[in-house]
Length: 470
View (cartoon, rainbow, N blue to C red):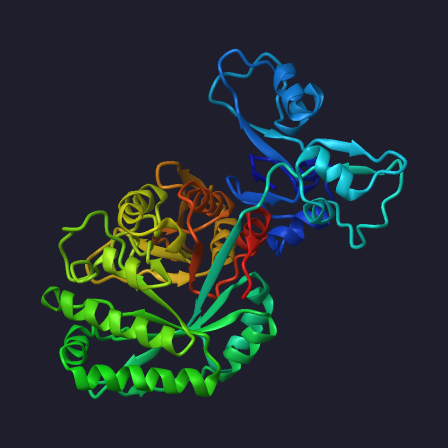
């Protein structure tokens, strides 16, 4: 895939001509509601099997083209470069995929062996449904790179029948589906949720349902509730017994513990609970996972962080979800919600004490809109990335990009004259997170939360990875 950033005056027709694709394919990949109205600075996913290359000292277009099996002319067109000599070190180029003309007697297996590409990948990249039906003379696109296997979890808090259409749309991209959440009670019992429809829909998409249990709500931090349960062997055993009962009755395949705001003094009690929970889940044939706050070091202070012992979670859980989001908190000042520079600081610490093959990177898929100037007590509106782009189009705002945070944002005045600042996710910020998952060798991605339309994300996810299925 290629990510194209819309320039002033560009139309969808012009953009599709640059890459030699149909407008319909660009519309579908990006979920464009009004293709005739694009925002300046809007990032579009272009569905072509291309790669990227950063120019090095001594490079020429001819050398780059030879290295990647393409032509200088194709590179010029793909990057909208008028002057062939105007390429400087550090410039990031779109590189059209190599192509192969099928010779008589060749098979996908033989072609794949020649280029080091799996036959299934060749078939996917070229839309071939029957690998045995390729004819001499056909031109095949050669995929640019292998796609590693990635686990994908999706939390969802829209429950009941409202969950079904959401899961029907994105469930094929998921390894796990986590209805959020069963709230613990003081006696170790659980507040029930309407998760039946979500579980059924997940199984139809071959996504394993994962039971999520928590101690907090939107109006209660839950630190004292957690303390009561964690420091009572009787309550702890009752809680785990009730979890097992729900899992058996409803068909869950594993348990996810998301205890937040645990009191620092309860750190060891929490670790003991996790050890007991892991042993009990494994004994009964279930997997076990946890969710932890985004720490950058073992001594990080604060109610969110101190009781989350990364090393213990990494030792006991089958996988650990890093909640790497909410820097741009709805009740805090405007900023990137999940900035990649902050995320990488968390990952640097996490991989030092948790095996990377056990880590899931948290990824929020929503936008936030703050009124300016921000005042204590204000609360940002939350909506989908699709709605954020539509808002920029409506008010004629140019979408800007914070390259340190790898996050898009824009400002606008509403119809009442109030100024706003919006931070959201787009194709560029999604790709930055996928790159991080690959760079650190992580096990997976965990989305918070399903229900906010973001078509670009799912297209890029499939382009970057093969999704693990249970």
